[in-house]
Length: 317
Image (cartoon, rainbow, N blue to C red):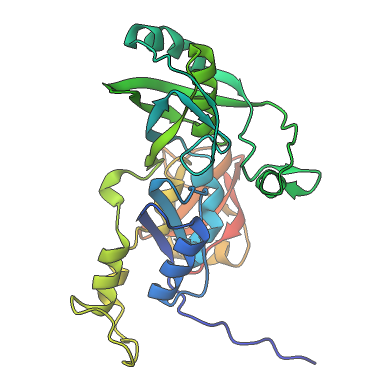
């Protein structure tokens, strides 16, 4: 009988709210953070394009079980639309495909914003990760092909004009999962008759995290290796205390769920997969999903039925 191989890395768990720099891909960012923490497991909650900067929540260890809750959270983007050119990628990366000498007035833009607020239909960019017949749209586009990408429903809760500049406009939006900011620039440019593309894009927030949770690659490296940095040929330091202090607790991703505080005995029963009766005057009686904790530590995600918590996903103590 084959023996299961020993897991590589440390069993560290929690969230690293990375301020991703321009030029770094999301997969590259996850690999970097995983290496710095020497973590067993890591993953991100929502891709951020290499040309975009800002919040990329990265889950370590047990926190990877909570990724869907962060992916579904509202997001805030601040971005600049450059007017006068439409590009194949709807951002600075692709070649210019259409041009115009026209530039929109502030009043014209403000009149247009309500059209892009609320629940709207949106067509993702040709250069996107959408799968068409099993292939990524951007792979087809890079080979010179054009694909028909169906419209999809997205929700934009807030769309603010922040600043008018010479030939461009700065906006900020709060939106739901699946919204393509590049598509907004493209479609607004067409509606205004002047064309447009994204010149700068930054993700400011991913609910429930805020800019106060941000940590940069440089800060992580300094916490891991000290101000002198990692010297070539030197062994990796064994002290992770400073970098571990930069990790946000796993349970922070579940603030959107009803919270249930358990005794140590009830927590042990749940960790074995058993349901428990919830006690307490303010305890919820019914909930499709709830978060159970003991001594402030995450124990499980589960459902509450008739005053009983039934675990669905258990977390290591």
